[in-house]
Every structure is written in structure tokens, then in C-alpha cells.
Image (cartoon, rainbow, N blue to C red; front, side, top):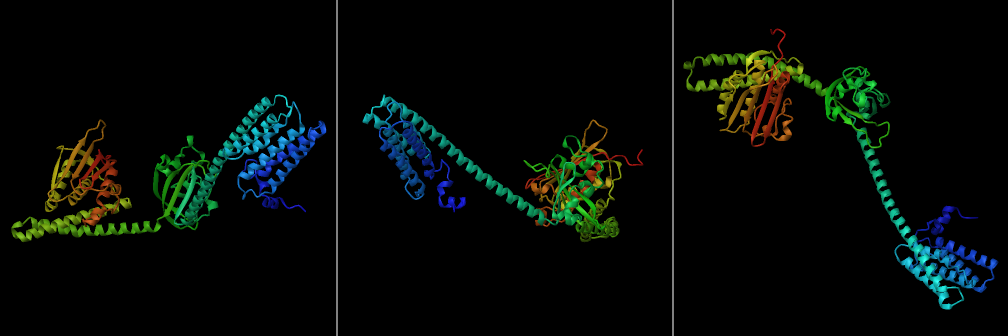
Length: 574
């Protein structure tokens, strides 16, 4: 009973090797032995050999080499022994040629087989030994003078042919081996890359599965959901199979996307979807909040971040280019902020009446300075100054609450921006004098504008207060008002405040207009304030349709530019 193929391969490893392998000794001897046997039989049958014993010796020698090559343990024997097999085969071919004794035809061409066997080996040792052996075999008939016609010419021509074939085979095999090595390295790199990609995919899948506090929705360019994570199922209250295929505007937008399924030219977002994705259409980031109703009727407040999601190279059809929606449940934070704003508005409103009384009595006492001694007058100034600061804080808090609740508005009237700024400078000068900071006002003599005098005063008040608080003693704060000339009918006024104070780091500039934001330096130096001033300035600027620009350098100071165009006329304006 024969052994299975796998068992034979394990018992005789040479059976599993290719022609170009270093250990394929037996496999390379097989065609040589077959050629010698076939040639000997043909000679014995077709012609009368001159020396029959040499034919038999050639066959026995060639067959013996094949047996030894098949049974030898070549992985443990010296490499030089492998050359002996091919040289012995050359000797067998020489015996075959001598035994035939043909004067005009020879069998030396069979030397190409053992020579090719040696040429398949790495390096130049194999071809060199093979050519040397072939030269010896070809020179033997010349030296022995066995009666061959033109033996020298035959030996030279045959050697050149064999040398050309041997070197060609060796070059081709060497090149093929080099390419095989490169392909093996490339295969290993591809396998390693595939493993890394699988690891990255598994890691990303694990992260998305663990992100239960955020809903990740991947959509195509038309806004149809193509993938949803576990967090989306938890936050939106719908299974992934239900979410896939839904229109994202219908889920997270303000209104149903009635036209979003129709597509748009050149892959652009449909009109309703474009309103939802906003800046993400052009590669930016869009952040907005929306109310979401769960299937059970409960409502949640979601913060949605939208980014553009490009198509991956060779992406599968189920992951085309589109958008990534990341929704976070901010219901608790939203409700807390609503309660805080309501409380701030209520407290601010209730504080205005007693503050008005305090300021009124301070002004009444200030009208009769002769009734107070110097010390009492200093006390009165301290009370008045702090009462004014408290009034400014209350106004800022109340305005902030109005902005959040949507009750904030401006009352447009014709005014002179220069006069508003000068009034604020006069009111702030005592505080600046106490801080040993000089306030200088310059610019155009008159800058007319349609604006809200009280809100504009708040803007200038907050800018000057911030500049004075962050300026060192002995420095100067400059406020200038200029009219921006424009060919259009809309007038524009520029208010610029420059100080030489501590300055603001670049990474904090973008956060200055956020509510209750205070810089690290402000917190470290324990500067008074709640972080509402610039957020209110930004609100007034936005209502005007203007711009707020802040340039600062730590240790050098800060420059704030406020550009305000005319407010549109009110409903009662002529």
C-alpha cells in the first residue's frame, strides 16, 4: 500500500522541490539519466556500438547517480558533494560517446543537461565547475585520437555552444531568483500591511462600538445613512438596520428633506441637505444643535458635528463618499444652562432697582460736597465707583440672559459714535486713574451712525474695562473712532482700542468671545470679571452685521477693532 502524497513529501523533501531549488539534486539528475538510457538503447538498437561495455557502464553510472541523489541527505552533506553528481553524469555521457564510437557524429551535446544542472546553482561556482568538466570531456577524444573526423573543431564548437547555453541559463535563473526574492518581500509587505489594516479596522470598530455616548452616522452625498454605531442606536432609540437608509435631515435636521433624494449636479449636496451640513460641504466643520424626539415621545437636545467624509481608495460600494454626523446628547447641559440663564436674568433684574437707589443717593450726596469732610467724600467716591462697576456687571449679566433667551434686540437711532465713546471715557477715567493708566481718545471729530446708544456704550465700556484691567501702571490705553469711507449708502464706523498690557496667547484668541471664558493669565492674576464682556461685544457686532478683530501678542499688548455699519431702520423710522 503506497503512502499518501503528504507522507511521501514529508519523508522525501526533494519530491516537493522545484528545479531551481538548491536541494533539488535528485530532480535535476532525472532528465540526464533518462537521456543516457534512451540514447544507449537507441544506439544498441540502430547501430553496432564499437564498445558495448562502455554503453552498459554509462547506463549503470548514470542510474547509480540518480539513486544516490534521491536517497542522499543533501541538507546535511557538504555542498561540494552536489557537484559530484553532475560531474559523474558528464563522465557517463563521455562513456556513452566513447562506447558508440561514431566517427562523424557525437553525443557530447547531452552535456548540456548536467551543465544546466550546475548552472542552476547560486553564484558562479556551479557554472565554472560545469564548464571545466565539459571541457575535459570534450578534450578526451582529441587527446585519445579515437578516429573522429575533425575532433578539435568539434570540441571547440561544442564547448562554445555549451558555454553560451550554460551562461544564459545561469543568468536567467539568477534574474528569476532575484525577482522571486523581491516578490517574496513584496508579498511579506502586503501581508504585514493587510494585518495592520485589519488591526486598524478592528481597533476602529472597537472604538465605535465603545463610543456609546456619541452617535456616529455615516451618510452618502445625498444624506442617506449608510452606517451607524452602537451609540447611534442608544441615543436615537432606533436599531442600526432601521437607521441605515434613513434620511439624515429627517433625523437630525430642522425639517424633512423632501428634495434631498433627488440628488444635485456634480455630486453637490441637495439644497435642504446643504443647509444642514453647512461648512462641511467645502471641507469645513459644521456644528449646530437640534431637538430630537425618541420613538417613545421623550425629547433630547443633541449637539451635531458634521464633517466631509471622502471616499477611501478602493472603497466598497457600501462606503461611498459623503458626510459624518457625530451627535452628542447634551440634554442635561442644555437644561442646566437654561436654568442658569433664567436665574441670572431674574437676579440681574432684581438687582437693578436697589443699585439704582444706591447710585441715586450717591449722586445726591455728591451734589452737596460741603456737607461732607474729605474722608467722607473719599468713602463716597469708593461707594459710587464700586456701585457703577456692579451696575455694569448686572447689565452684562442681564444682556447675556436676553441673548440666550432670544429677547436681545437693538433700538436704532441716529447718534454720534464719538460722543458715546467720550461719555464712556469720562465715566471710566476714575477707575483708570486709580490703576495709574491713562486713557487717550482720538480720531475723527464726528462719526454719525445709526445704532443703539446704550448697547454701543456697553461695547466701548467692555473694551476699555478689559484694556485698563490688563495694562500695567504708567501705561496708556488709546481709543480711536474713525469713519470708514464707502461708496455705498451704508455708513460704517471703526472703534479701535489699543493697550500695552499682558497680551493674549494665540491659542486663546478664538475663545475670547465665548460666554464666561477667562484667559489663563486672568485667572492666574485673579483679575476681577466673569468673562462676559467680549461675548456681548460680539453679539452687538453681529446684530450690526459688522466685524470684530482681535490681534494680540503676549507681553506686547492687544488691539481690538470693531467695525459697525448702520443698523437697518426701525419700523417707526421715517
